[in-house]
Image (cartoon, rainbow, N blue to C red; front, side, top):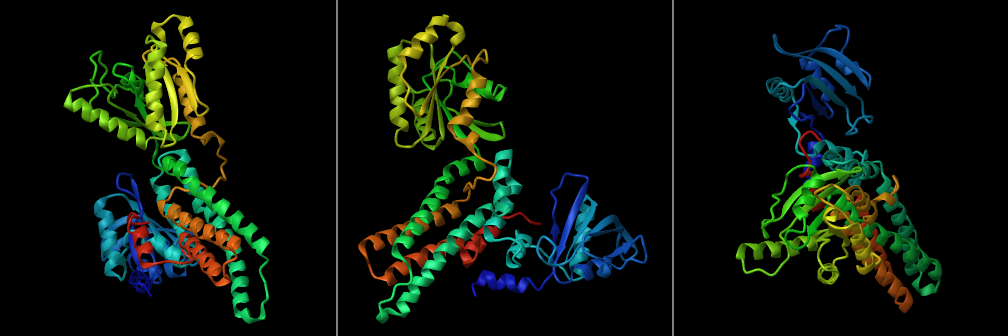
Length: 475
């Protein structure tokens, strides 16, 4: 048994306690879970109704009373009782709702520990839920994502994963592969009989279907990771094209310095904004131009790095410049992003300073590619920005997502899916080349193994340690 698993198996015999709410509110909740949770709380809780005995209370019942240390009143509290297996962890559990004084919280925890409980480790409540089968590993990881979610989109993805949307997909894939692996290994047992239990055409069709779905899930990681952490949008262009003005207009605050002096922005300026439930991380960069200023050169180098990291590139330019110069600069930006798959939005700025026919003229002259967009705006006058906000949702594909779509946001899941895809690719090649069944069985078993790592049907010391050490205390 791995050391981490062995360590937690020993701790499962203990009753743990920890604050379950953050400081700063009026009410705090202290969570107690484990085999003696009711008995320990019964020693320090004095119900208003003298006929109530906590150890006899039914699940989902609430009692009002006092927490006392001898004759000293600590606080008036509400105690909620949960009976196994109908609790978050799957164990008997108690939640103590008290006033959110640090003094009160500390004294209640000290009383619990004095009477037999131990302090919970980070993520230990959720880890117990995993060990008792209340959550699989991917659902447990979704709990952390729910806690850290900042927007409706990241919250929706985490909720879908916690409710088992992702797990059910993985379990279905794993079950199909297990069935065929069993048939192939059965053939190996009858190797001298020359019998075939698994139809090769059907096997290949299943492998193709499973691999396609695996690749689709893995392919959603780029968008999922962006939704989880905020979609990076870099604003680039020549000096004085209006990059900082655009950033300020989108954020609706004076975040970046605006000046007519070229090269004012020497470093990247970042801030976030939520549009239709999606968080975008806007990055204003140093103007792209030839310069001998060492500091400005460093800023331009960083601009190129930010372009590589962005999902969306907003290229902003001046409507008064010649069409030839505009097209030349657009071509340079295209070359910079061609190997990274970002979306390019070309913004022709300062429309308030140009005659109306200028937009029509440039719309004919500037040729956009299929994956690009051309918008005319005035960052100073806030015109065209609503259309830009709508465009951001469309070009990232977020507007096409359904509430039940499975989106991968976890790097560990993505890496496991990529290994599944590689194993299944070898299976397909083996079937085409008619290699021996024992080699095919090895690759199928590898794919099954990696799928099991995602949900926790197969676990390792390292995986469990990495996941739960990143949780907060009390969860």
